[in-house]
Length: 570
Image (cartoon, rainbow, N blue to C red):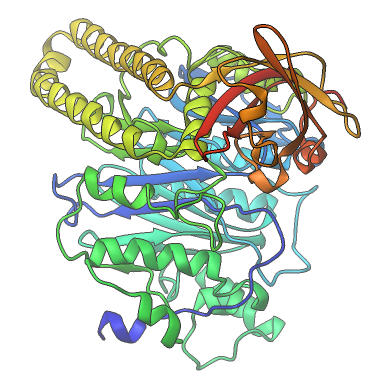
């Protein structure tokens, strides 16, 4: 049956909740230009986050060791051995710990890549859970134990059947050098499993995408029987997991179908906008792309966005995008290449990282991996403090691009990425033999090149900041809800030339409609004092030493961007 018969969408209303707009693209090895499995993933979550990168070494544990990840969920038993891990940690501060539970990205020492997408909400309203079930520990235990994607599925099923899954609905992708499996879980103990065909590409936004769950897969009979018992499905009908288990008011939401179809447009090289408006069929689990997919294809998809990242329906690259990863899975795990962009990838450079590096480049890790594992759920707002590191440099450039436009930055990013790819091609041709015969030299080589890439991106970001004339302000007091705050800025413009109605201050991850408005400008000999009222952004602000961004215009309409570091008090 043709794609057009399957393709369509439900354009229902958008649920009034956080964006939760992660996006995953899974490319089978026969659909890939290089013949290697590719995984593209944008990690999205609203609010203040700090992204950290860790290497965690393998270890053996005392049998029976248990851990409680989230305080309100089940205590789970750790496996006796832990693989070495490449871990991208999303660190945040919130009272119920939920935002820290579902954002992390793992690649383990056997080349298993693990990422996930929120799929709320499922129909399940009476889940079977053991002492609250399992949440964050689910992905981490799978990363620690699995040797291949198929084993990852088995471990996942065991955990779900033992503890029950704590969240309403989620999609997990388990990929290795040979296969890709998608497991989509419902709150409680039910799940669907599907393998991505080698010659196809699966696209996963934030709804269930498995349609015909594989009949021989584990959990299939239980999935059917439970749906019949709940009255969601009648035996003899075609079983469509996404329709049967997705909550009615979460099925076909525009925020998901829009991104789903946008990715298909790029993969199929077709304009599908008309189908969005006219068809009422279903989006397929996976498709055969119009041509072989390469790294540039995935970059194009993951960077797709509106003129404004805050525009609705949310785009693939949007206001809440924390990080973007493109993983090229090789037969030698140490030669796996992760291309990683901090923040929104349209305004950030994809840096190639080899899995086999022995040290994290400076500026990407504040504490080592072992300490980070033990403190992931430590709820401390000081962890959100501004630091002069790679993450906050990326945030400053991202905010400036939102204010000033990003065409110039885009062009420079592409030039730098092309340079990296040329250097990578030269290096990569030498590595396979070196890893076999002289692994120490191979590790030194990849450590040096990744460190060099990171240093170049640091220089690039600082150069872009200078070229965009981003000014730096100085806080005169703290931000306190309900009170005005003041910022000094250099006197590069006269106070009577500023259009005060367009002068605002706020965080990079909130819409400017929620930023603080300037209510007063006081000139001094060599600086100006801008007085701001507290804006709506403060309502959800973390009390910490934070980075804020300033936009102002002169009377002719010329726009300027600046930044200020300031304490936010609760």
